[in-house]
Length: 159
Length: 277
Image 1: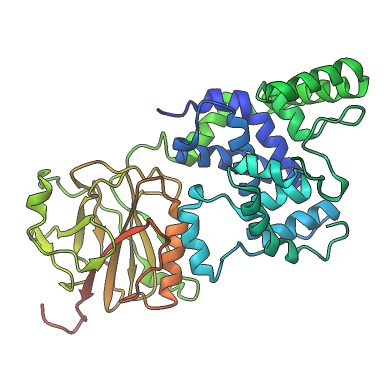
Image 2: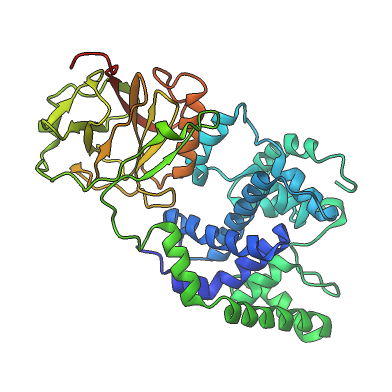
């Protein structure tokens, strides 16, 4: 089944762009990330099922923005920005080398990013239960994967 | 069981009397919130003017975004980025230098017309007769053909600057693939898809790629990798992985792929300029 980009954008484009604006705080980069999110969706269309594409797009947008932030090494403008940037810069669970990370990206669609889970939990305020529901993992699995990453952002107030 | 929200935050849940969490409101507006939460939010919007204002603000923002970034234009740009509407290109023209080796003169990638498609598609048993594949983790088959004499090049075959190469593959059932090469200068060249954001979908059976690649004067070797998978592949990540290999052992090193990854390689030795053919 081919993805109907026009229809998907009409339906979900504003939601995706708002998500990218929130995380990137830069209109131009947000639009770019929004487009990249839909590109990612096209290339992972097997993940698109019949119910609630918003959830998949929301996570993809989050992950795309984190990748943008990792590549930009932007300076934080406020506490939320600092939190997001720290999450973006934190290593993934089990990540041992840059090469391994790069190769993991090939199959990123098969494994939800720990960073994305961290944003959902630490920034968006979803409970571990809700994060687990969003990403299709067990609560203990989410907790385990977030444990290491949280240590990297622990210096932030309120985390 | 419902654990306490982190740090007092309850952003994901509808909370009567407080602002509706953004993610909840988004899904409510899209009609994709679970029925029980939908009822709660609907009631909150009916009872709380601030919540109703939140929804109006979101709907206004929707309209503003659709006005500023119209669907037709955005969808076209997205499809273009994804390579969906890109016409199929006949040559590989995209190259990347390794970080330290930006020697421009050595990076010549010559754009040539596609080689004549004289190689008929054949059954996999027929292509399997050449002993082409040296190693790798996958069942996919990669063949490199020199245009000048239509020779199918074995792993370790001698080639020279100026040789024009064509490619055939049989993905052995894998649905997606990336073909790239690394040369003795550490330069990584993407051959398929033609662009980083191009679609990685492969055809079934034995397929001749519609491209030609002229070897430059990079020394020692040109090593080709065919990476295959059953799902779409992040081309940029494959290129970056190859570049990481450049820093290790581009000639003989094995890429460390996660479970499920498949790769096949073919190494061509470059004839020194003083070496007789």
